Length: 245
Image (cartoon, rainbow, N blue to C red; front, top):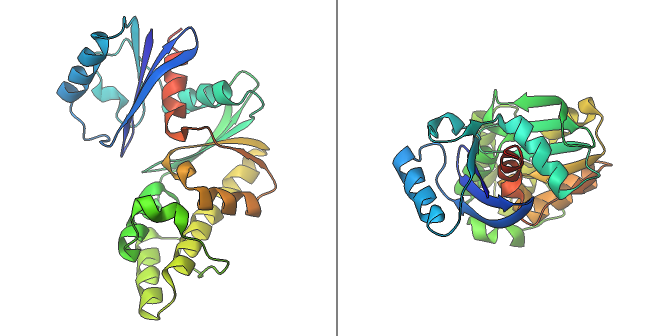
């Protein structure tokens, strides 16, 4: 069995793969701040149940896993993971906690080109989390909130965009309209990246891909095929495990 560990900025994902099949996976709500001793204990518990042959590390905090047999860049792992779930994919959109990545991949999941947006938090999952905090919307309620109207959030800076959200609230703009505006704001940053790489069959990975309303909005605004795995947070982790074969 190959164990893939993806230490992201906000969550840590672990997947066990045997003969190219997923045997188990886990998503831990601790990201790059997770300490190596905690990871070692998790791996030790897994080894009591399974025979682990290799450990492959990836993600934002991949270099913290000194006990890994191999460390791979998350961009490379994302390409392989996306291809595993959808063979027809020619691209990947990954909206992570700290950055947004768009990849162009070939029929085998090899990365041909990619764009990384990490200069500002405005197009990331962290910005969405902050917006939910300001709007006092719980994560578990996010798929219940929808509006045909969308408030305009024009700032390209996360800090100023947050100020805009507060201003809209003070003007009594409904929360659901502001949330739709937040989605549009993130999508406004994503679309140029997708168009630049000229990709059409796109695997959407990362925690934001669990947001069904966001996915609907993205699909309505871009003339591309968007594929979402049943568990979009483990795409990179699966790719890392596959690179261990």
